[in-house]
Structure formats: structure tokens, C-alpha cells
Image (cartoon, rainbow, N blue to C red; front, side):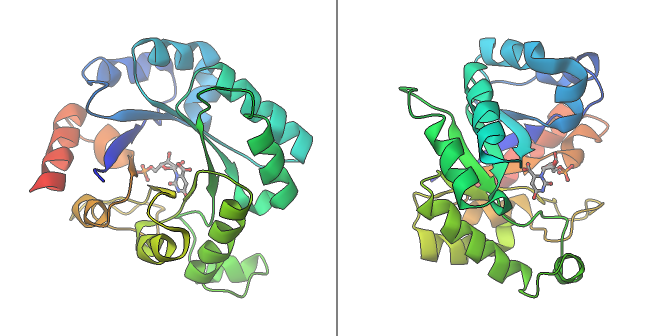
Length: 230
Ligand SMILES: O=C(O)c1cc(=O)[nH]c(=O)n1[C@@H]1O[C@H](COP(=O)(O)O)[C@@H](O)[C@H]1O
């Protein structure tokens, strides 16, 4: 299965995002709208991307009581997005409620659960009272997510092989923490290069700053795309 790059549009306004979006081809990549841009630009911006035929990943990582998350996921589906995410640590009932909220859609968005953020390492889990390694916690939450009937998980590319083994190749893997050779790691901790991630058959590679902070973002994306097939 070919990997699709989703560009994380982590900009402070729609005006900041449009110059890059206008250079992109919806057949070549998807777009991720996260907390910063959604809070600044709102649902209308998302609708405009959908109207331009982009696959949109609405990354708001819902994590709340089951009723609230179910309603939020439903609202996301109304926007016509291709994929939406929740936090797996919201628990089984929350995950099932989110899934149930999409039951009436003939073509619902993919529903994905975040396992362990790619910015976290073992010490960060210890701080919040989790004694498992990141990989163990990811596996645990991936199993819970699959049991709850969701389509896949957000994890780091480092855990992809074991999840594919446990959950099967149809289970959708979405991996941020992607860094081309030599790119600044920033706050990410569990990272992998785009080419190495693509070789594992990961369906969605989420890439932000290596593209958006480049002098020529469209050229940076093109170079990453080229590295996936070479
Ligand atoms: O759900 C996400 O997209 C996400 C989950 C995760 O564990 N780690 C993670 O980095 N992300 C998002 O993926 C993007 C990564 O951006 P860069 O680190 O700039 O490539 C950001 O928009 C994050 O919000």
C-alpha cells in the first residue's frame, strides 16, 4: 500500500496557509488541520479545503466524556472531512460512542485514535503514572481501539511493524514524527525518515515543520514525495 503524505497546516491563520495550499494538488497529498489553525480559521476554512477536493484530516484529538466526543465527531463528519481523531486514552466507552456517532453516514470519515503522542518518551509516561514503555502502551491502546471498532491509530512509525502484526495490515496507521535525514527534530521524540516509514506500508505520513518551515515548502514536499519512491 502506497503511503500518502498529509501536510500538517500548522499556521496561525488561513491567510498564512493559502499560499502553500494553492500550490498543492489534491491528488498528490492530503491536508491536516489541527488545533491552532482550526481555532483561528474555523470550520469554513475546512469546508473550503474539502470543496477543493482535498482529503482533510481534522486533527482535534477529542478527549472528553463519551457524549461530548460523540457529538464532536458527528460535527466533524458534517464538515465532510476524510479523517478525524480522538484520544484512545479516553477509554472504551468513549471510543464506542465516537464510532456510534458515525453509524448513519454511508461514507463516514475514518475514525482514528491517538495512542501515545510522538513527542513522548518513557520518562514522560512515568511522569503521568504509566510504567509501560511507549511501545507497550501503544500496543495496549491499539488493541483497545481495534476492539472498539475504530479504523486505526496514530502512533510513531517506530511501532508500525508490531501494530501491523497485532492488528493486521488493513488497520490504518497514521504516523507523525516524520523527519527527513538532517531535519530538526524539535519537540518530537519517536521519529523516522519518510522513506523508512513508507517502506513499512504506513498508510498516512503526517509531516509539518519539515515542509511548512522550509524556504520553499512546495519544493520540500516534492523532495519528500520523491524520496518515498526511490
Ligand atoms: O494526531 C496528530 O496528528 C499528532 C499526533 C502525535 O502523536 N504527534 C503529532 O505530532 N501529531 C501532529 O502531527 C504534526 C506533526 O508536525 P511536525 O512535527 O511539525 O512534523 C503536528 O500537527 C502534531 O499536532
